[in-house]
Amino acid sequence: MTSAAHGSQVAGDADAALHFIQKYAARTRLTRITLVSIDPVKKGTDGHTFAVTNGAGMRQWIDARQGWRNIYFCPNEVQEGIHKKPSKSDMLTARAAYVDLDPRKEEARRPCG
Image 1 (tube, rainbow, N blue to C red):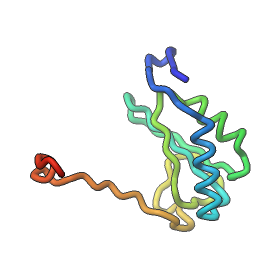
Image 2 (tube, rainbow, N blue to C red):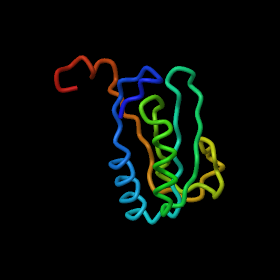
Image 3 (spheres, rainbow, N blue to C red):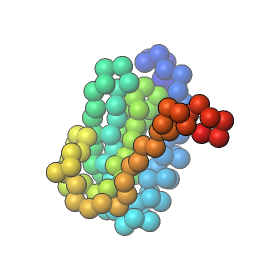
Image 4 (cartoon, rainbow, N blue to C red):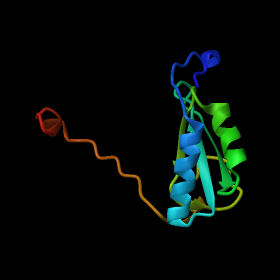
């Protein structure tokens, strides 16, 4: 799907996203998933927490943003009713950690990084 209304040429796949989210939730025993979107131009965020069983709600939320906002999920369980980008104080359990491993400048110049 592309979003001509927003001038984007990014294609999305809500089916693949939901499949991944549901597999991840089952493997980590999460009961809720928090989705967050970031506007790449205005830099604003919004989010919503769903019961893992609410695939229709997640699909509707993804479809409304797909193709023009960057969409992420929180890998950890957050408190019920969180409808924003979660903060540290919103977290209930840690299931995973995001790690950003950028090479040091001198490593980036070498062929094997």
